[in-house]
Image (cartoon, rainbow, N blue to C red; front, top):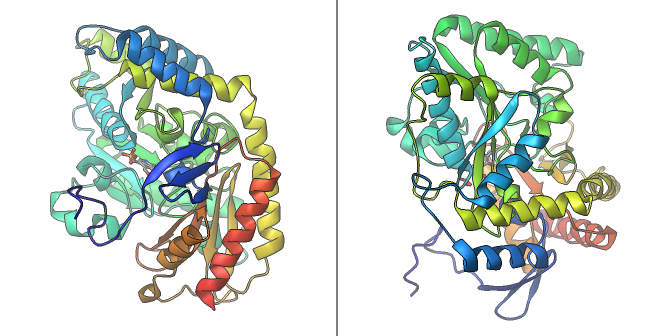
Length: 440
Ligand code: PLP
């Protein structure tokens, strides 16, 4: 028996041994097309020579130096790279080792900012139902997925949740996009007034909801409205781009397509593409300047923040994406994948919605297309599709609880930015086969 405390203590996992572009290869030589990048991580595939060389070189030169003593060239260069491309107003970067740490850091930065600005009463966070912000206690409390929270509820800080922008299910018949946005904005503002506007610290949201809702983008105008409400009340906007950022939706930052910027932007996953564990919080100049003029330091920190080898890997990843103009490929292959999914599954009796942006696409499965009734959760359709697809050599990321944490099934696709049309055909063919096999 393995001595590893695996995610599942009853499952047995194949051994991943090698990578070849968008494919992973197991110990038996079986090839799996990675159509989800694990959890939207491996955006350059699994064998990028330039990134591997950068990791090797940094590890051989100066692998790590603790950030309380030193800065490092790769950390400075990566921060310069990101700041130069960041949405307006953002110009510094706090490095961590993953998405949950990025969210925790953002929450604490928001709190410290208000303490230093003489508004210590600001402590409330407003987030959205059906969001996922990570598994550490602060991030878990912030997330709005009932199933993930349930057993840990007694340990979680108090966070207020409002509705997500979920047009497929929640936009009312006859309601225009504009009216739906106004309704959601009103709900946010009602919560702000209930908590006392002067007590609210931050509103946090994923521009395109990933794991818990299946690549769910907001409709046009939603984020501009939320941003405007937050600004009116002096509330910080935290965007969680851990999954949807770093080019996944076709622009380096997902929020570019929503026409907004934020006070804090959390990134991870595609930042290091899995070649090293790394995440970051991108911070507005106003927040940085306030803390610099106040206490002068952020009362936070982890052993591995700004890890030199991780920063070197992430810099190489981002340079590869830019130099090879891979975001153009994300947009082209994303459009092709969506089109081919539509052709193959758009009229499928159990595919209710195909959505997403760039190479970040989701399919919501339903028992009945007309009523949008979900499948019985006891059927665990999502888990069966994951297993079937894997058996067929396709990695995809299905999940249940799409609607309320319990009901609903979706499949998330997030293939590497390097795929071509033959990979699109392989994804669509194998995915459609797995769905049909599990519904037969
Ligand atoms: N935020 C979002 C939007 C995520 O999708 C995730 C992970 O899936 C996280 C935060 C947590 O990131 P990590 O698993 O790296 O801690």
